[in-house]
Amino acid sequence: MSDAQVSAAPSAPDTPQERIVYAAGGGHKTVFSFIFLILLPFFISIPPMIFNRIQHGLMLDNWGFLVLAAAFGIVMFLVLVELIFSLRARVELLPDKVKMTLPAGRGPTPMLRYKSYEVPYDQVHTVETRREIYGGAIMPVLLKGARVITKDGTVVPLGYVSEANVDPAFPYPAIAKQIADRARLPLIDRGNVRRSVRSKMMGLKSNDAAADAASIVDETYIEALNRSHRNFVLGLISVLFILMAIGIVDDLSEERLSSQAAVAAPAAAIKAGTAAPAAKPPKKTNQ
Image 1 (tube, rainbow, N blue to C red):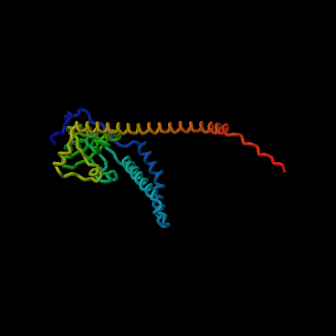
Image 2 (image 1 turned 90 degrees about the horizontal axis):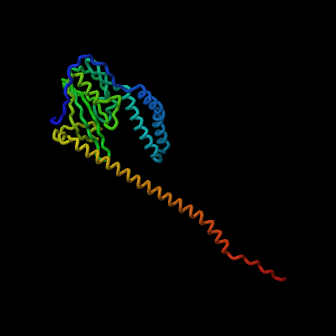
Image 3 (image 1 turned 60 degrees about the vertical axis):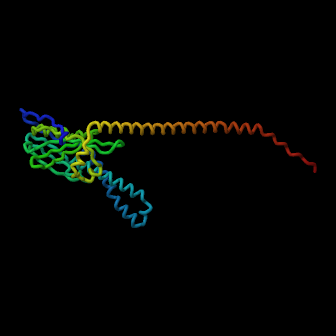
């Protein structure tokens, strides 16, 4: 790719490289294991409850329960994905090779399938990074990805990190830089590309070279995208602030009118009582 940026290859190290391990911490594993075990009994009880309601003909009147069950299933899936990742994901940089166990492939559930690699540094052909942009001005997402390509053509994807929230346990661009340094290769930056969320989630790869070339964007586009996002967020905050101010003013006006009516009601009753003429006593009749 013509716009790829190549960092200078490091010189040969004089001292042996130390062993570095990237993995989730014990606290991370414990927390997600605890959450999963707490939620699991409730999740297991949902199918019998649904079956029982269907048997008694109550399912059509309980769509809210179905929505709640679906939401609970999504939450359990996300917790399971994070738990498996914390237990299995691992990158170990050794003096002569790198050992990795990482999510395998693309598609709807890439985090449930894992693959282990053991790549000697002298078999590394290139180490690359790339920034991928998803979404638009409303909700842009910028991901920094890294991958290793071996001399036999095997592509080993390291992973992605969000530029807004870098995972300290797996800083993939920094890991790629260390692998390149140990392999005595330059780190290649493939630039910025736009990607479709649908293609990413479904694991679809583009085979159109022209479309791939057209998806390349520069820093000016990213700055304009971030500027549009900031303007959208500021506009949304302004609208919410105006609506909140209108609501507060309306509440204060209603409260003042209510207090005025409460004060005026007794005064009106007193005034009406004093203004009413005294009733005349009935005349007595002689019998």
